[in-house]
Length: 84
Image (cartoon, rainbow, N blue to C red; front, side, top):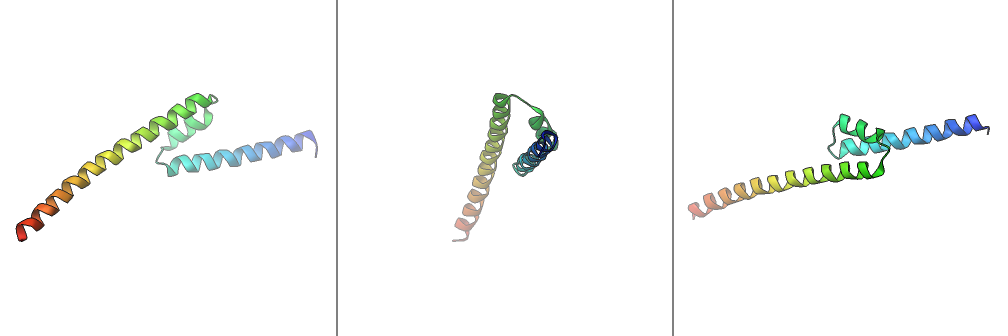
């Protein structure tokens, strides 16, 4: 294979890897803009910070949903307790 063919193969592999990362980011709840910006960053530390920030955001949502579930559980418990 010549140098041009090797470059083309490398570009194809990089494109496929970027597609996998893009899909993973979308599956993780990131917006398309976030995923695009992430893929265009060259600095690994900035990429890691972005991922950490998004992770914290998701964790905050989990905690918020847990509080909501706790409220519903309490209401269900209270209603069942009154039936006794």
